[in-house]
Image 1 (cartoon, one colour):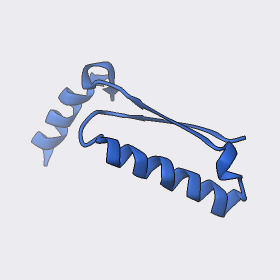
Image 2 (image 1 turned 90 degrees about the vertical axis):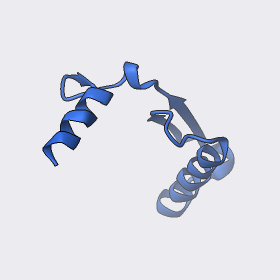
Image 3 (image 1 turned 60 degrees about the horizontal axis):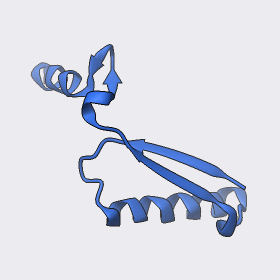
Image 4 (image 1 turned 180 degrees about the vertical axis):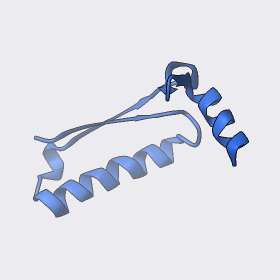
Length: 70
């Protein structure tokens, strides 16, 4: 019984896109590991940007600094 936890930020996280992720991950586990889709659990957690850090910074600040370097 596979359990997959996907954590994403809210940008573009529509119900349709979440359903696409669930279907895609389930299909991948079936094809690559022969896991039964009926017992495959996929959980999507949406994490607000202010609750996500990267490189010691809130993700929005990290993105701003990365964009400034480009």
